[in-house]
Image (cartoon, rainbow, N blue to C red):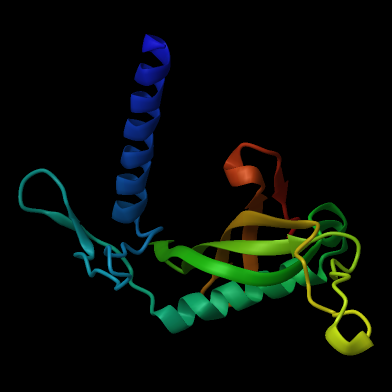
Amino acid sequence: SCSIINMKACIQLVVIALLNISLACGFATPISHDGRRVMISSSIRTRGTSSLEMAKISEQEAQSAIDKVVAALRKDRTANEELGKLKQVNNILGFGSPQKGKIAVRFNASFQKGGMGLSSVPLPFGLGQSNKSEGRGTMVGQVKASVSEETGKVIECSVFRDLGYGRAFNLKV
């Protein structure tokens, strides 16, 4: 049990380090405990007095990039066969511009595979059955993608299943 506790502490430290790196590189937008976005400096201090300026992108640019990624995933036959139909974007995890001319986005999306997923709950007064979706066959995957700022084309896209512990799907662009 002692090694399990140490392993949990190591995993927590790695997660914190990765989050700090992603915030510093512009992959994530920090959010405060009450849900509001927190602004951080757009420059990273290096040794001495020099600093490295990072490109900023607006939420509208990020949303446009997410829409292009969603359209590409919905259009791709292999993605639909392997992941299922992309139903909705659940939440946006982060966005930024790590390299000039490139928008990086990360978000969670729901994919539904096979079946209608409708409940068979009878309606009152003998009116038949409801068409309420139960969410059967729904998988939430984390999408990591890069979109070209100039052309608006998807450069790369990966979908991680099971919080990254399962297999990853790489969209062929």
